Image (cartoon, rainbow, N blue to C red):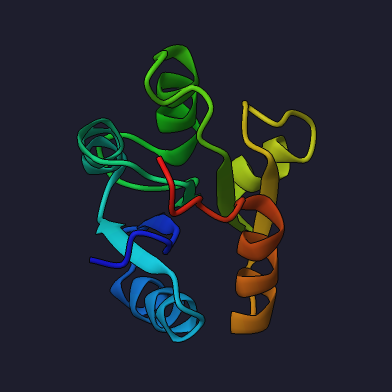
Length: 131
């Protein structure tokens, strides 16, 4: 087990985005957990240690903004940094420009692998090998 690797959760209902982002992050040494909707993201965040969550604003069942609110309201997940992804033309994305909804950053789609990796590196702290 790679105890020093940071775990990044990616939540998006678009498999192309998930594949692209997963590859970019795993190539840089991150462990990646994938969720295809906000409900699954909440379950995964409660069930395992996650260092950062990157999730789409518009997903079926539970969207990224609602999931972010839930994460910030629960003691176990309240300190996990959340980055919301929003398409430039998404009406929910425009609202994000006005309020952060508890997220630490908004990443505009489309983004490059380098932009994703640099955002993640900036926001996660290296794990200590001694616990």
